[in-house]
Figure (cartoon, rainbow, N blue to C red):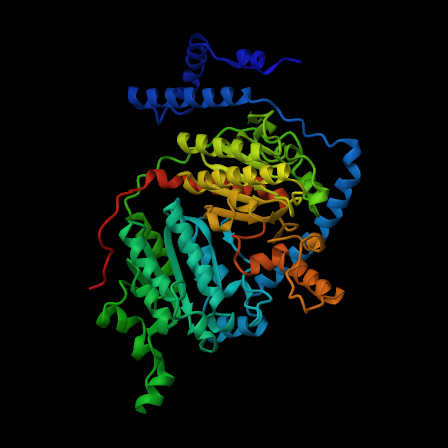
Length: 595
């Protein structure tokens, strides 16, 4: 077998070889695209593009190929993981089916037949290009202390409109009449944060009855409550991140500020309305009977108040108006490139057997990598040092990415290695993918030397945290197993602001693993006696609260994705994050203000 140096030399391309290949292929371009190739400049551009594609295709094949075969001694672990993954996916499918029904059959009939409005997913199909969109946190709002709020009462995600990646926030009025719950505010704020991090145009489809008053103390007064949505709109507009809104239903109380603060707003006749207090409150306060249309309908706001900019006679016309608005944004996006890449050498379906049901069922991380990256090719960094952390470069559907992946405890050496590699990626402007599966507990020191080792590990982990926090490149985190303890911070956990963070259905998120809780010393008063029932209750609580579905319901992540879909989702995120390079980045001193 050739070594890496030999294979590199075989793939190295001489200038004479490249020139001969270009000379051979140029006539093919001219023959196939004769109507397009009108002048020398066009021909030169095509030749140059071909040269770049050939270079990229050839040189990426020099990365060594990972051995992704599963050792026979590990087959029983693979089978156990597979059974656990199938059970997790069953729950995933059941929840997804529940989400798709919104507020239920009765609410759906009332929304479509009595109110004559489109369902939120139908609206998105009319608005977005004919491509699949990336939905964010679909399981948010389930099994909360105040009940179920399917999808938190609003759909958020990223899709293309006229070729431009956009973040959308669309109220689902079949869920509690579009009322805003604390989890709804949190979901919208996260969508806005993603828009800021990735400089993505924001589109709001507003159909909201305003705040859910019994929970007003949890969604009105604090810094990260409802008012922050309006604050963000102004800041994003000042950052030249366009804000576009459609009033496609009732916008009551705080909901009326979302379209009013947008750069441009469209309202739909007969079904769109905006007011701080609706007709029932007007009747109660003044005794006057007034219709929603007269109080704050499409004609009034487009002709009298000026709170909207475009009048649409139907929802279809409204979404066409939005698409036309986006065509006026003057974005200078390059032609969509088709990247050449190889599929992984190993089946993505096998990732179900590599998703650990517990930390003791973890197999080597390179088995997962070999099923995610192009051609299963991986240029490893510091392969022989700090081996409990795997670092290196690979491609995901043609996108170059740095990879930082747990392969055991984050030791002193592994932390220094991770810090070094993250800084390299930051210096070279290469996005980083963190594959997180942190250890649920660390052994307690029993001697002075062990205590000293723990101190050194602490310092090294702090260095890695600093490097991750300050790395000025896009970051994606995928939790493939456990997200435990302080090591999860160094692996770009939620509090370290990754651009995107996803979980596999088997993932666990907790300070400690419930299966190891008995190994931790419990703080007790001297006159208190603990019993087994307290420990049992604590374990059950930790077990319930650490599941991926509990996490996603509370928006501790951006959604649960199936292992076999991970490559597609990550590649889509890399494409989305790349768009910001082609947009205006200068900061204005003021937003677009409606005068």
